[in-house]
Length: 161
Image (cartoon, rainbow, N blue to C red):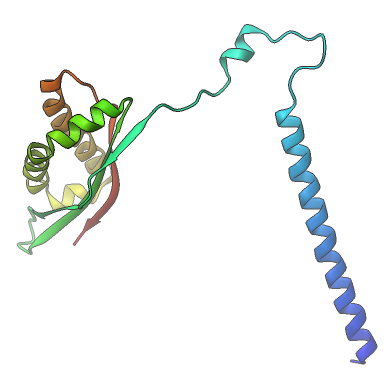
C-alpha cells in the first residue's frame, strides 16, 4: 500500500471519528435542551404535570464501619462464613445518631441473626431478601425503644465462603 493511500485512509478514519463525536454531542445537547424546556409562553401547567416533578431526597444513610463476619450452618459439614456490610436509610440525622447510640446492641442482635443463616438458603435471591427483611426487623426493634422508625436496611456487600 502506498504512503499516500495510508494517509488518505487515516484522514478518512479521523474524519469519521470527529463526525461521530459531533453527531453524538448534538444528540446529547438536543435531548438535554428539550428535556429542560419548560412550558411555552401562555401555556399553563396542569396539576398532574407539577405533581410529577422529582423532589429532593431527604434521606440519610448510616453505614456500619466494619462488615459483619459470621459462621453459617451448612449441610455439607464444611465450615462456611458470611461477610455482610450494611447501611441504614433514615429520614433524619436524629435517627442516625440514635443508631450510633445503640451500636453495641445492634451489632449483637445482627450477629445473632447472621449466625443462624443457612448456607444453601443464602445462595438464593429469596434467601438474601429474607435476610435483608430480618435485618430490618432487628434494627427496627432496637429503634422502637427510641420511638423512631427507619426506612430500610440495605445490604451493601455480601460474600459467602
